[in-house]
Image 1 (spheres, rainbow, N blue to C red):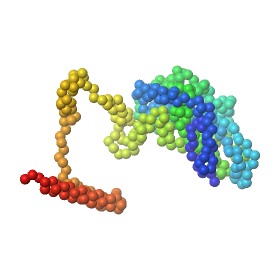
Image 2 (image 1 turned 45 degrees about the vertical axis):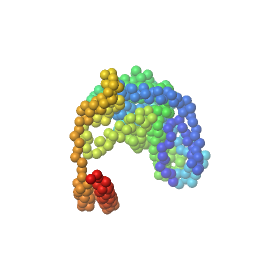
Image 3 (image 1 turned 30 degrees about the vertical axis):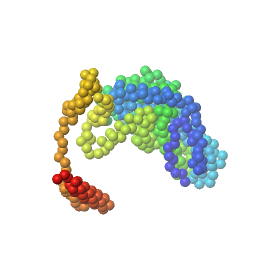
Length: 408
């Protein structure tokens, strides 16, 4: 039996697993050439881009291409249908290129862009609608021309439609983050109003490019599982199944696999480049999923509130005169704080033990009559009340002892 595969490491690392948890790690050239210093430097530059343009996670996208051997099976013996063994099975190297793209909030995954070798595959005959965007190139590779066409024909309209569904203004800014790949056009050619592209520096893809932090591998695991599941349910041998599995089948499996990638996976992949994005998204999700006064406010107002004290100073700014007064007259510091309007609060009346006991008893009576609390929880409340009584008794004894030592 095959079990559902789990996502593995990011692009650039191929792990071969052996018994007892020992694994061999094959590091590719991309990982070897990764530039940690350049990655750390760019993280600060990226934060500045975000701040200067007042961007939120839903306005920042990352796209990355990956080659997909769309009907490849393990080369070792594999049985399917009524077949007992599949001896001498060769690795099928039919490939597609898949461009995946999503924003940092995880709420918008752009429709995958698939590139095959044939402009009009016979499997597409009589198919009116495909779940993905499809184009062709003789080697099934991405080119600058194809990418540019994808940007204007698919990416820009989908981003605008996403913003519209969120109630955002028509001219809302969006940035598409790309790696430094030769197949990507110059960024000055990827501009449509307030929707623009920006490039990562060279040799940082494996370190900080979001889609490379497990998203693509996650997608591929879902695809492999879908392919294997089809094989296990096929009433034919392995070779026949591969022949019958068409580009159309692959395109639908790609769409399904991309939809299976969780929103949280799309959010977490930004942690290395932009840690603040993940935290902000989590808070926004909580606000939207619970019944509270903020739930119906526009998202931009909620985000403004969440980030309202982002640049708040952490030190008190004193004038030269204030500093002189502190040195000459130490009491000035106390007076300075006392004059602060925020410090002028009335002292609340102290709650007595008797009042606290009354409130505690009322709460326990409420819990005992409510279906919202279990018996174990109510027992915990009784234990808390017993501890309360013990502490009250101790406080009374301490008071009695103090009274004994009062001067007469």
